[in-house]
Figure 1 (cartoon, helix red, strand yellow):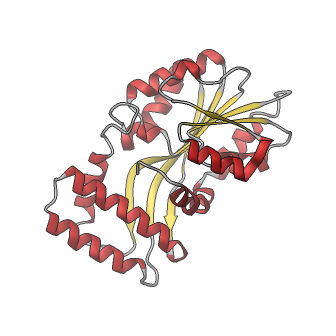
Figure 2 (figure 1 turned 180 degrees about the horizontal axis):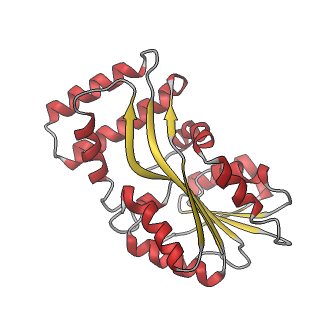
Length: 261
């Protein structure tokens, strides 16, 4: 799902909040309790959803830096939060330029499945040098389940997951394998790592989100080119009809990671 916009991010935020593992989110907040004046850097911040999820759970005030390459999303974050956070525009590929000074915790949501192994290893090495912990939530793990089955579900999922391995701006992505690579790399660099499932569930009251998600899946499967176009159309038509059916839901597997120094 590349080319994120404000509508997509706004629709998915309530689902994200429900999906986040409550234990790891609380532990991420708890990790800052011993820091006298904690600073948090949220990378790929979008409009600030991770800030909105984490900040109410903190037991003390913290300074937040929100980092993204898209000035339009940062403008939206400014409308949400004004001057209560620092908003920084930059290229995440320039890892050495990340504003990590005095940062105790780096956060990211729905980011690392877009990244290559090389990027992940460079990122972990740089963050480790600064002594920061990491809370990385909502990493896609390759699972997708629909309550109303279709014969092509497995084939569509295989094509979608293969498409996820293309370059999303950070080298050829690890896609569904990214969360395990990130967790292993963090352990190799001396972090204590906890992981937890954070399944993303779109139910009947998330119809608009389901439709947008479905559009993204269909687009990716077309681009990958493994399935016949008539098969894709048949599957997509069925799925679009099912969105409005009672009891229709889609569950997408994700994993949360908390790594403490």
